[in-house]
Image 1 (tube, rainbow, N blue to C red):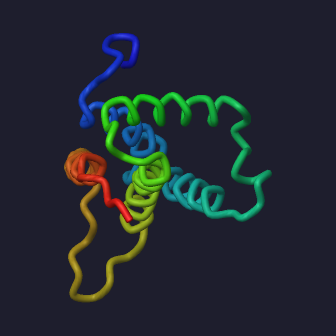
Image 2 (cartoon, rainbow, N blue to C red):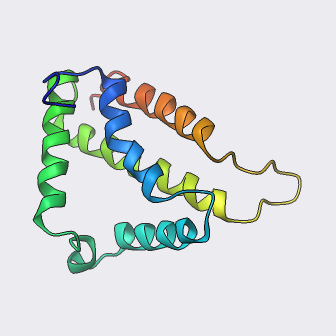
Amino acid sequence: MLARTPDPPVSELVEAFAAPLFDEMPADNKGGDRRTRLIVMILSDPAEEARNWTGTADGEIRERYFAAFARVLPDLPPEELGFRMRGIFAVTAIDRLQVHQQPSPGCASPVAGEAARRWAITFLTAAMSAPANWP
């Protein structure tokens, strides 16, 4: 995507960043359930060795996305941009976990598939595009 256009719209960056999370944590099979739990455990593990299991490639990819978001959202301080990018992981992971769990009585079942993906991308694009919250 960055080869096509160095400064894509925020919505395209969000989709490129979040879509693989939906792809790797599908809602329609048992493997997706186990993979979702594993990814959430790794992301939340306090041990650096666990969080860095993907090696240096993960950090390089994250840095490229950070730089791309920083270019298209120049008013966001780096700390806030990092927080919002972690929010993409959090929203996606929690959504995928809820899809695999039994719904609470009286609550609608979470939506899976393309609808959930579109809703998440729309929500996360709005969150990433919001004005900076200066102290």
